[in-house]
Amino acid sequence: MMIQDTSGQDTALEPNLGKKLKWPLVAGAAVLLVSGLVWASVGGQVSESIKGSELRLATLERGTLTRDITTTGKIVAANAPILYSTDQGTVTLLAKPGDRVELGDVVATIESHKLTNSLKQQEALLEGMLSALERARLDARREQLKAQQTLDMAKVDLEAADRESRRGDELIQNKLISKIDYEKGKDDLHKAKLLSAHAKQDTELMRDTLAFEIKNKASQVNRQKLVVSELERQVGALNIKAPVGGIIGNWLTEQKARIGQSQPVLTVVDLSAFEAELAVPESYADELGLGMAVELSFGELTLIGELSSISPEVRNREVTARVRFEQDERLHLRQNQRLSARVLLENRPNVLMVKRGAFVSTGGGREVYAMNGDIAEQTEIKLGARSMSHIEVLQGGKAGDVWVISSIQAFNKAEQVLVR
Image 1 (cartoon, helix red, strand yellow):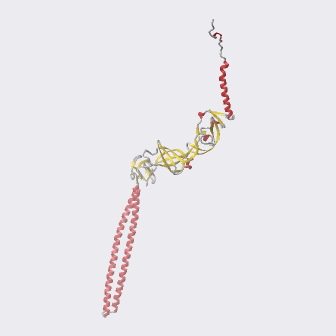
Image 2 (spheres, rainbow, N blue to C red; image 1 turned 180 degrees about the horizontal axis):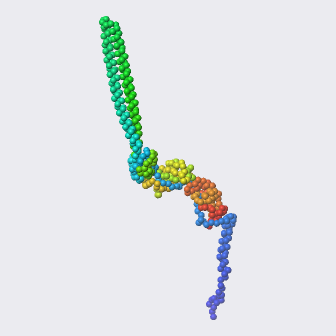
Image 3 (cartoon, rainbow, N blue to C red; image 1 turned 45 degrees about the horizontal axis):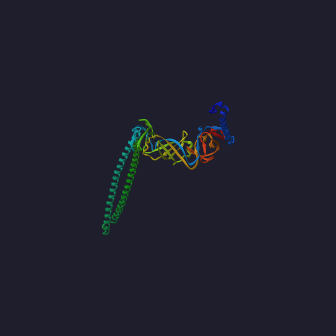
């Protein structure tokens, strides 16, 4: 009989449980050994661990640090004058808010009976003074005519006396008259000369006197004309005119209200030029300066302007600043339209910087946790200038270092923390 195989001699054995567990136990022991070595490699100082998903990391880099202030503001008209009443009276508002007006259009009137009556009185007084001036001129002509007549008569008497004197000379030579008559003729001639000279002097004096009186009255008339002209100006100013072209802003008084002098009436908004009015936190007030560049954002459009004015006072812990910028046809601006802005305080080139984060406040700006592989190590630092997005690193890091920029409170002041 022939044996085919040895299967009949084999005995089935059950697997040993200890052998089944041998390799998993060996693998676990190896893992524990490696972990122990890792913990031993850091000197046993790692007492905390934290999940990496709970942290924000940032890499230190060199670049240009732009110190800026991010704020909001609104569009205001660069020229929005307030119109005031020129005298007390009853106001009539002719233009409504939103109405378009041109330069010189009458937008309101003031009814002042006192001023208009005063103008009429002064005009009547001026008419009386003009009549008096014309009367004085007529009187001056009359007096000059009388003086001229006296002078002419004196000249005639002088000529007659001169003829008698010459006749007396001829007669005395021929001994036809007495010496007494001859001397009397000479006296008459001398008297006629004196009367003629005095008449001439009186005429010149009369002419100067009358000219002075007329000039004085003319000065009074001119002075009165100035009074009337000023009152006419004041009455004309009762028609309040738009100093610029634009639209009516707001009524600052009621229709047909009784107002006093220099009381605000309404505003006119010049739509040809706008400025941005920004509200800057007072903590940055000392860093602002006229002429600083400002980046204005109008949705997708960004323009660069410059600070044109800074308010000297603080209101609600904010300082108001005005920004002048070039008008753009793509902009459709409206009064009080909101916008965002960035005031560019300073550009620092080649600065070691890192993104801003909660580590600045939670660490007091003096410490941070720097990544060394999977270990976050507590590091002393010194920070410098700050922008809205980055902060300058003066000490404690170099380009390429990775810092934890989120809050460091979760590290509990530990020197080293394992990041899982």
